[in-house]
Length: 314
Image (cartoon, rainbow, N blue to C red; front, side, top):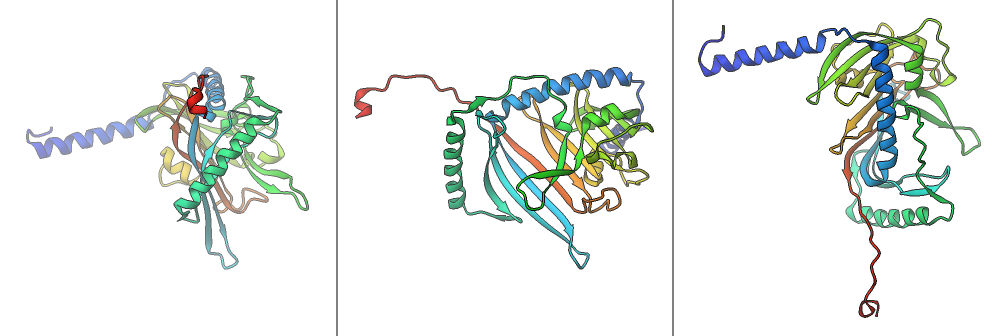
């Protein structure tokens, strides 16, 4: 029993809270998994449609990080940090975001250079949106789970084309894996359903996901919004010191993570393919590559037609 003094009561409360959190995160639920996955896929597709249509109303930071072993076996790291802007309309197959470089390998770019880049970015957005071939963003809502897709590209020899050599494909995970052992976890104060998964024995995967039969993993679902929020995949038999979502995302071979904005939309936060720490899992991928999106800021301006006063014109 907790004695009635402030110190003992505080200590007792902390122990009870820690025990509750552990039990909450470890307990298994009686969940109708097929029904849950069907409902969550629908909600995730609806959320992705919001992502597509709302991207032009957001700006955010975008960080790329490469880690690889040098000839001496030492790990070297390179990184780039950008601010991204999206056009409201663009030519089909040429819809690209506009980048402003903020830092390179941890060293900040000067304010003067950033402002010059922003001016050029504004001009580029105007050119893209002013192109005669530019069209509003697609209104097709029958979109697959692109939020769960993330690939590592390499340039083809003697060509400007790129090919994917490793791919995280959430659609294949849903269609070709079996899910089991539902538990719950509190992530950023939000209740989350966690499902373990493993590839079915008869599953046939694509060239870019041929590593999958050697893996297992977990997927996280926001209990309130019914949206897939995280995906972590690792080599079978890998032992982890912890099983929390943050630890598994940091130590998985492949990871995908979402972040919820104040407006209630789940945007991609992290995509990662880690061949450096899993050298036997991928044929061509031996480095650790990740892209992180963060610091989302919502803005939306409405331009109303106004008659310009002659005195102002002159």
